[in-house]
Length: 402
Image (tube, rainbow, N blue to C red; front, side, top):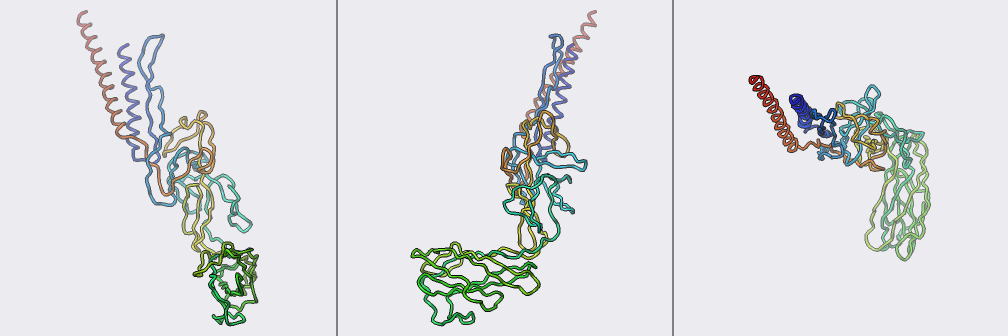
């Protein structure tokens, strides 16, 4: 019986060595989680019969170090959760390795070509993302690799300080070609439905205390008259933000432009005339030039026209008992009945952690601890082999005595 007990000890140590060697071998593997062999005693009819590896536990809850890559499509989960990826066979597995890219078909894939799972972006009838629409359908995360259409400008935001030191111009009436007939001007760039650039120039003319008229010139044409009147109170603030819509016909086959001009925040204080905001929406057509991930999982596409659009959201999966997940190849795990089903959510919401963009999670293997475990296993192995040797010598002595 002693031989069998010692043999079981050697087998158990060999099994633990497999775990230790696997940990050491994967000390440089992104997203790897170390394991530990747990020994259990064996009994038969209350008689000891040796030892076995009763279970192997994973240190999934222990995070690895952060490795900054600076690459836009790399992402690390800061705490709980897994990335969900689908292989060619349709099976969804889970990984901590956020090494993503966009393939030739526009699919977001991980380093082994598996398709990342996430939420689509809600689009309008023209195929443009709808701001504030929430998350779309769940499935393979994709990026449209073609061209995005132009968008006509329908809002121009301007605010700044129209100096209270201005005097009423001596030259009247207003003439955009006579600089002495106005106090200041500012030019903005807008787009029509074909993506053609146009200019809108605002001319500001002080007409009295706390009163300024605004004239609008589209592509250098003469203004049709006073476009808006801005009235300021004794504290230099607009008494009422005027509701202004500039209507213009581009004349190049594009649709007519109806653009609202917003003066919210414009002031009239003494000192310099300044411009704080001068921007319009709308843009020319553009082609995809790059993609990146944000800490909330947003997949942001960058286009040649300078526009950035959120085209999807990478999902993070959490489990009631993540320690019961089954380890598989490619630094991944599959769900089991004991782990529970995957619960998907946006990074940073619910129990899912935020992402660290431009970073990867390193292996959580503690090399020093593994080497100590290796030396301990070596001593256990030697002790069991010594037991077999001693038992053999005793049996030989017994046979000689007989």
